[in-house]
Length: 391
Image (cartoon, rainbow, N blue to C red; front, side, top):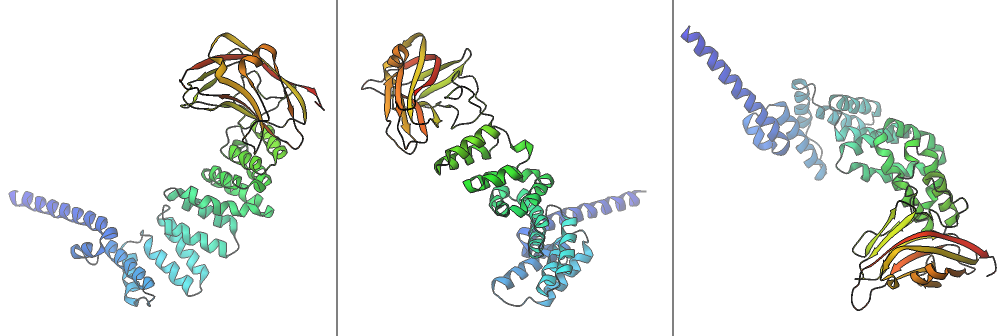
């Protein structure tokens, strides 16, 4: 009985040693195949890592690969039939030999064994693109992006390039249905170029056509930078949900933050000060007085003519003289008209939009003095109306 117990204990100890040894070999094989080889030279992980290292070294030195390297990897495939690496090597061998179908089967076998294999996704994407199957190639590219650190951002411009061709839009929509995780990054990449506006509107699904869509402010900013104000405002209205109605200035009541800038208010929240919407259609403004800057602004597309701004100040303002309204043409740093906030509240303010100024920034700014003084006001009853077309 004692001998039997001793035998069982020895067997258990040997098994434990084998398990620890196997785990150590697998861990070392990827990073240090030579060290792992000292523990267990013919372990499949060692053979795979050693073989891949030899293939990489031969490729770097532009030398032919030793046939014994392939034999070693084949031996590893027999010992570890679920390992993907031998199939990757077989795929590369087949592709090099011109047998692309065999290469595809090998890469698919590798991906089946390890769905998270980056090389398998890469080789399959390359195969599909070269075979004239862009949708399959894009799907593998999306897999590659999902598996790589920051991969989605890296491959998004490559996927976005396919949207330049109108004939690929149907495939792009199919790709987004199959790989929804990549859509946001691809649309943002497309939005970098305002000429892609039609492509974005054509391929974005319903979940990516809303005021908070990541691509929308990027596209609007680029359309405005290119001077295409009408197109920018049309998309802002259609996707962003902004509709002026009878108002010349959107959200004159400071109660609709959903549509994004620049055709809605850009409100400061920084070391300059704070501008925030308040219940009751009011704008609460605090200017710290330490530096000059814009506290609230909105891009307009007013036609040439004369306009009048009216507003009231609720309560008792503090140092309102430091605050001013101004209007400047987009692309210009200097305003063509300005007025102190106090005067605008008392008697209103008329300003004339000149010809050749298709878009204007309406801005509420703070001006610092020699001694910093905090200003605080609450604006209500705000509105802009047109007085005449010719001034």
